[in-house]
Length: 384
Image (cartoon, rainbow, N blue to C red; front, side, top):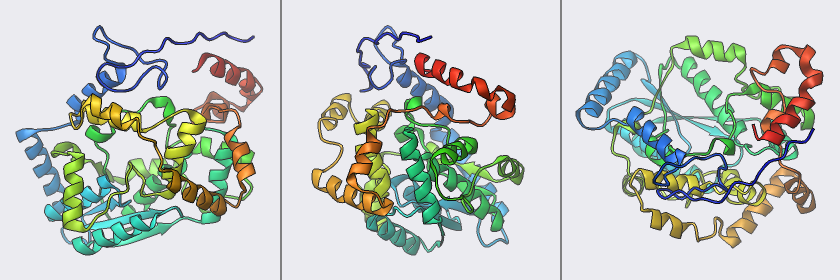
């Protein structure tokens, strides 16, 4: 049975710049404000702290971190990518008198600028740096498997590995507190179907089983044993960027002045792969331009006007010359030619949920697996 779907009338939010092309399921209130803006406001109420409340929370948390770290080499860990958020987390940690171990996850896609920024940061702040270098052949095979599977969130692989690596290194160094860079005012909006669950190790294994070629011997999976260990480890994430004034353009000026930091020209563009994925693969194949979510967040947090966001969207997501340089680099690093890459780009888009997922009944009850194709067809037809 084929279920018919009906096109959604075009409508754009009157507050941010998202529309029904970006998310056909978004809803609007009587003023034309979308559900993503309303969800942003809820997150802001829950996570953001201001004034005396913020000062008290920050002060007590810093004291807890310092008390735990007394007598230890480090009192906290910072995952350092060289991007704006993590760089500012490191800068503030120094101002707060913390003794941080910075951990950088090297997945083989660092830009030269990212390497330089990280070097400046740890040297000027006098923090130790530990770099975890993933097995490139395994990681390349995983990324190629995701391209062949034609699913949207290839960045699951890096995020999944980073999360597990930071916990592992935190425990190895007897560190309880991990300082994160997540913040509401620059990251509060992202349509759910643009991404996938970063911690679903079953989905990664299922996609690799079907399309991968090399055995995964070292990839840091967040399997059930690891997740149980994390839950019992006592390690805590602290996102104090939600407790301090965080204006993106002002923060960049501070980093440039104090740490000789240089801008990448886009969110998470410290990675060549992420730049190519967000700037070319997402808009070309999946019709997703992540700038719309990033800019909408800045509009909701009052860091830019809606008109400014709309004007920025009229500029191309990728400099044409840089795109050609990056594309040649990516294909060479993957070991594929342009014809093969174009073939992968033209494959029909598939849902991550067409493959086994953690918590799926088909995973827990193998006897039901013969019914999985029917269930997958239903999900595709209904958009669930």
